[in-house]
Image 1 (cartoon, one colour):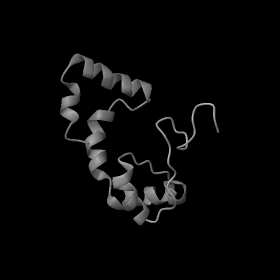
Image 2 (cartoon, one colour):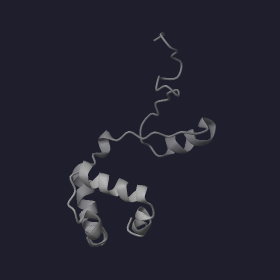
Image 3 (tube, one colour):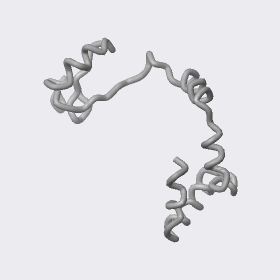
Image 4 (cartoon, helix red, strand yellow):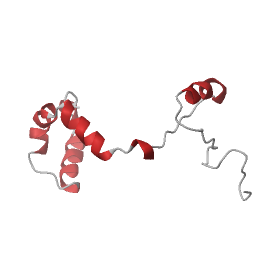
Length: 100
């Protein structure tokens, strides 16, 4: 996250975009000057604590896209529950437009 910061200001357009982010998200004026140090100060314990507080595994939805014949057996082996198969429009397989 910090190694790409220098490239954020290579063009006038990039500088304008960074300034717009500061305004849009009401960030402090020194946001980019202090960003790298703040990122480096984050500990694994802090990330894990936040993750445990905010992510509820029982409410996660996993979306897997691929060749069903190749990936379905491995997905079933994970024991995450019965896969729900949907088409590209989010409808359960077998349903068509206007038909239940």
